[in-house]
Amino acid sequence: MDENKDYIINFRVSRKTYEKMKQKAKENRESVSNLARKAIEDSVEIIHDLSREIFGAGDKKNKFEDIVSFHRAQFAQDMECASCGKTISKGTVGVVGENKAGKKYYFCADCK
Ligand SMILES: [Zn+2]
Image 1 (cartoon, rainbow, N blue to C red):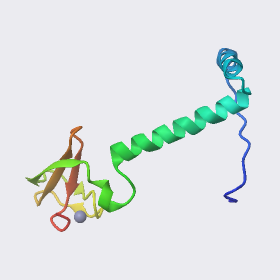
Image 2: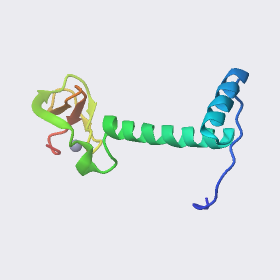
Image 3: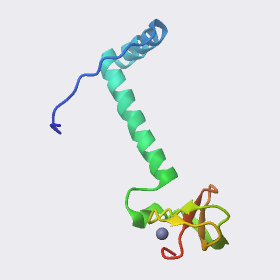
């Protein structure tokens, strides 16, 4: 795909939605398509930020920086290591990392 090329997306909206968009576009003195484009760009950005917050950034170093505590745990089920993806077999000891929101990450013994 050509990185610099713009694409045209056609999509259907209800009359109610269209009327709302038209009204909003009029208030902003812009076209309905421009309003839709900005709304999509904004939401994509928000979703990106949210997913970074929830799942961590792409690279491993930052991925787990939200962890506030670690503890050792003996896994009662086969788990997938959050770092290397290796299966942590049931009964083995690994490490659990937890962030402020209570999200838990499971690590194999090699990764922690
Ligand atoms: Zn691992």
